[in-house]
Length: 181
Image (tube, rainbow, N blue to C red; front, side):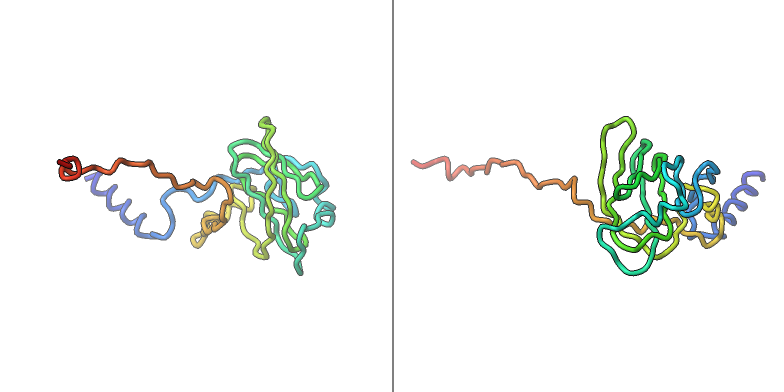
């Protein structure tokens, strides 16, 4: 009887909203992460009130936008935008700098203790998305219509392409070819 009741409750819970995944869509909000103009950094090396005006894009566009920086590494990284050292990101986290001049920015991502720095060009976007996992703002993931950002990622990676390679194989000969008498 208990099993039947449990199955019926689980069936109702799953049928309620099939569009949402059955696992959590974000981590719990981390109150230690920065908020405001420079969002989701664990540690800031700059003044968040003045850094936005100091940042200059490599290629400018009209208007303002949001600069989303993703730490795709499993280690802590230090972020530098242009010549401005911004702050430290925890592993697998997206940070945002709001209200910057629209365009393309050169962003250096230095992985802690690895002596490795990756420099990427990142375009600003006009839409203000929720960065997850993140600070208290990420709590909107509990809303019914929430869709996790970043799943529409369509970047083309210029490295790591596999070169096609085939092994030479012997062509089997037939009996008629071997007998030339």
